[in-house]
Image 1: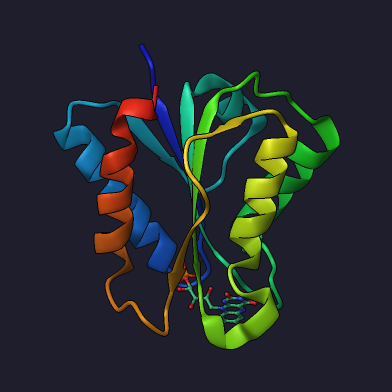
Image 2 (image 1 turned 90 degrees about the vertical axis):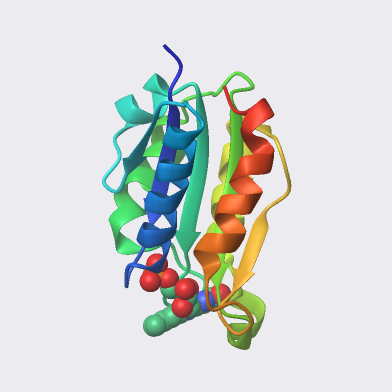
Length: 148
Ligand SMILES: Cc1cc2nc3c(=O)[nH]c(=O)nc-3n(C[C@H](O)[C@H](O)[C@H](O)COP(=O)(O)O)c2cc1C
């Protein structure tokens, strides 16, 4: 059966909370999904489509919980053969040039791995949005037809 992988990068729990709400929505829509906070390459290969939801830390950096996984993807370079993906970045525009840097890096990497982006990077700005889960869940709901 097809499964949607929800890969989360989170430092303080915001993105984690958003991911759990997306999982709940997908379940309510009758779709199987799994949240991965400490993913492996096997998890990555096993899902039929994927949503990445990641905050940015440091100066445009990937949260520590995803660091090794992203490095593994860069090193092993498992080609995605047009597997559908979408990326939501949680950030803060007051950081200027590094705004949503982790989301950008992930989007770029998945494109290099020959995944199929089903939409552009969603940027969620903490300066403007107090309830990121509402925006991300609504966004993910619209993507349902393209998520296998
Ligand atoms: C130490 C620190 C560094 C951050 N660096 C960035 C950054 O470079 N770019 C950005 O867009 N947001 C940055 N942020 C903002 C977070 O990405 C944002 O607050 C996000 O909602 C946190 O989500 P989380 O709780 O899932 O980690 C930073 C936040 C902190 C506390």
